[in-house]
Amino acid sequence: MMWLDYYSDSHGLYLASYDEQFHVAGLHCETFGPAEPGIGFYAIRYPFLENEETWNSGRYDGTIVHKFRDLPRLYEQAKQMGLNHLLLSGWHVDGFDHGFPIYRPDPELGTAEELAEHVQAIRRNGGHVAFYINSKLLNMKYEELTSFRDDYAVHNRTGLMKIERYGDDNLSFAVLCNGSEGWRHYLFETVRFLVDKIGADSMYFDQLGMSPPPFCFRADHNHRHDGWNIGYGQFLDQVNERFAIGSMYEGVTDIHGNKICEQLISTFFYHHSGAFPELYRYTFPDQRLIDMIYPSKKQAMRPVHVSQVSRDMIDRAFLIGCYLWMYDLENDNTFQSDPDMLNYVMKVVRLRKQWLELYGQGTFLDDTEIAHSTSGVTAKTFCFENRETIITVCSRNPESAWTIDFKPKERTVKSADLYELATDSHEGEPASNCKILSVTPLTHEGEPIMQITAASARLAFIHILYDEM
Image (tube, rainbow, N blue to C red; front, side, top):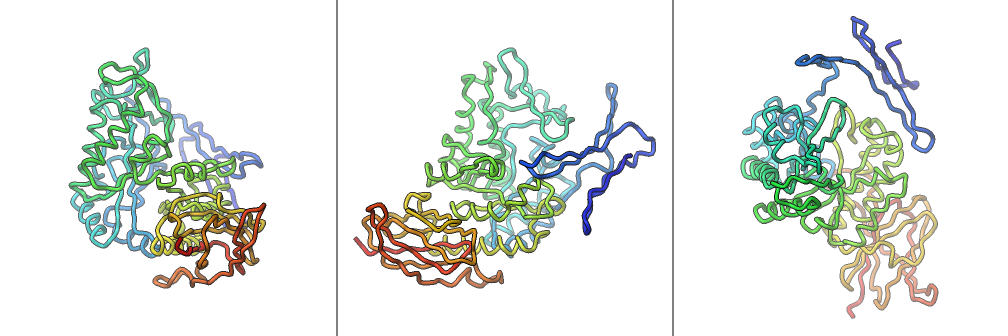
């Protein structure tokens, strides 16, 4: 039976093979057990090929989601959500996860001139545009890059090239060595093109801080076999010296974190198995982190257990002061298909912007200044020298009152103001009305504390101002 239907009373997912020649094929459905709720589907084909034969999956090929002419509309949509920064992936020849490293605008999406026109218009309108670049992969299918690949790929002790596979089993990528001057130059020239010719003001280097560092034994690369981290450091230094742009990369690493504007921490990977982004945030409080967030339904990009904790991950990103990463994959992953969660995340963005615009980021202290809080309430603190403190708060029981016991140390609290999520999401209105809180001096284990009480709030921040010392 070459069809299946996974359905509820109102929705369904239909998969089938329409091969009129009835070649051997398969449809597969699997679940992952109670610890990881979710379900996976895939189709199997067996295109046995002789030399120089080809096979095309036809109707299963990838599709174009947006073209360059869509950028003005996408920026306006982002502005309505309270955002002003676009990250463009799949912008280059052969698209995302295929066209590495042919980093030139894909003619199917429009011309380079058209791309530059829209990017520069967004910049003039107060927006920011970043471009995706994979920092290490070369698709093995590009015969015209054979010489480049052979010269600059990672090779092991026996001289074999390092190959990795992602996505489709037919896709193979050579891992290019960042210790080789030729590959670093290629990456640098890609950045130069996007900044000087297209008008970008930020870059995203995928895998730079995430993928395991390999050993390379190519003597003509003129580096130690364990010099992977040094090569990336040299590349980032070169970019920072030449371009006044905001750069980001996937992963977090204390080696390169001070050379970059933001690092993508991707808490969702380990949310169910002990993710603890607070550790890095506390250890390196001056480095900025970005975290991916997802809608609570109608997204196919990640397993269902990621959607089930959508609100929790949004709240956690707010609590520890992360910037938010949201996708706009219209068929796979977009908040536009989840109006309730879109409304919620818009409120969170506006509250976060209010915090930053009024007081700035502050230095993350985790919960080291929190003595106690009501059950179900999580609180984190950010300090501004000895003048002010921001306390971020999340309550699992948003309709109930809560208290936080805060350690002011030797400081005298002058005022405590609460800012909470707005009751609506109309553009242009303030995120919340400031509420003056009552602060009660107490002691906890012999240490003076200030007890802060609030009537209710799902997500909020408290601004504490101290008397001058």
